[in-house]
Picture: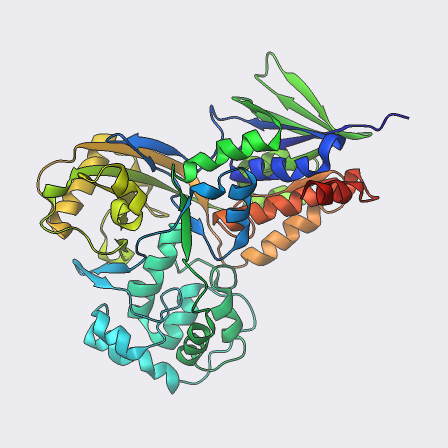
Length: 478
């Protein structure tokens, strides 16, 4: 009897969907995979483009090297030799108009070394005096999720929140610490908040326990992280269709039916199983009929928008070349640019590509700052070049510039996020042949997103092949 070949449709061609397609391919000829994406290209927030003739990332520029999933997938996609490490990761905070080095030993902005904090010059004398009061204040033990700002402000004061924690978390989520979940965004600190009286001592312990010889924190690819999606798509063996919008998802007697295309001329795609690798809002729309409880929870996940302004200057435009990887900007200072990366300094392979230019990128936009993103590209470039002139003393105009807009790109892990994700997963747990993955759930970083894709693929394969034959196929392929 001929073995059935199952058809799995992955909706969403970002790195989550493409990774899911790759992991589904572990079942060999037992499964054929189709990836559908409404965009004209795959890759989602991973995109590389030429700026002044140099290929550079205009979306996510790096992934955590100390989590294995990203590097593993790059190697599996044939890009192992393309992995690159940063030349420096020494960052700074632009506080009150002056770049100040991040204090040694900080844990996502929470200081653990009062001497290093004082030497950094980030806090005012009053802010410095407030921080060690954490050691003598009554305990602020929590028994439920709270906002990052609420807990850390109670322990260390407003300046630590505004000028250290907020810029670091803002660089990840483009969000507001008054709303971000302590449990979801700072899990080690959250764990300490449930058992330890002093946040300063908890930060000291966490910093001391951090591995000292674990290698670089970040990694990228020679042609940019934007080169990863195409490689993963090709290695997956999936049929990838771009420019295809999935409008409806319905269960059938033995699988799922997806309706794509324009309303006057719909196309129906039949599948034995489906992976939804789309952002929360479109995922919720597709689940409105089949999993309304999940759809309602997904609708509550808010997204922030931002823009990346990439600039290329001649080296001579800088009075002296930047020494660190870049700087972050506290929202309290009300500057339009929230972060600057000195790309040619951070990534030596970019400097090698053209030693006569300096590439950098400015991030603009936080949650609630959509108005600035409504400006024309030329205005955003003007904001970025003015920032460089004021802060770095750069002379003249850039040789080249590029504005890349990321509308609704960063999910906000607000208070209660982990419980919300648990409810979403519970609501789809009894829908056979359905799995979710992406940045809306367990982390916005590339390795975390890939991890959700691997879990989703395993759920689908276990459903299609309960005997576990796919795991044997996977073992043979290794």
